[in-house]
Length: 191
Ligand code: SF4
Image (cartoon, rainbow, N blue to C red; front, side):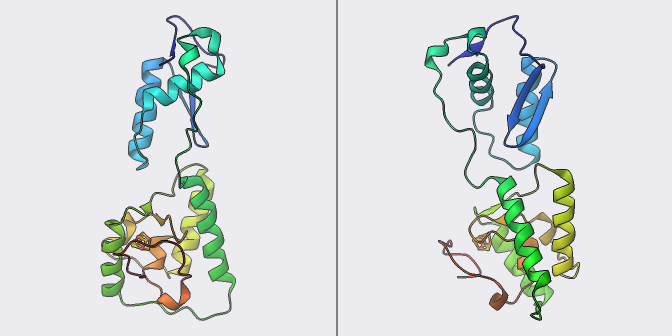
């Protein structure tokens, strides 16, 4: 694996872009820890933090690294990027708000039962990363379409990687208001 040589400091300081988020630190070791904490706090797959950072730095500044000929250029963008899901959820929520159709919400008991299924589902992923103002705006839209309702489990929900909606709001909707497509897991409450 290519590694930055001792004494090297990249132009602009130690930094790494995880998706669209720029993370900075004072030292290389601190950068490893910063990225590791960022991924943990945002429920992102931990992956190979050191490998990702070294590949990024040595790909950008190859003359300052050992073993550069061994660098394999791979995408550091995992599937189902949270930033893309954020955009999809924003459009989904706006469409519901702008439609003239009356949206019926289900009972809290049913919403809670659905939320527990989503919490156990690998397709329930975090969408709250990247642009802070965008996240806040989308949180507001989500609260608006579910009439600010929540149950014990719904605040812990993310978005559905298959249906591209906010699970925190979707669990309150009559199924007729949700577009069901794609490869849903067998245990999905929408199957
Ligand atoms: S696939 Fe179904 S159960 Fe899984 S997160 Fe999406 S809506 Fe929830």
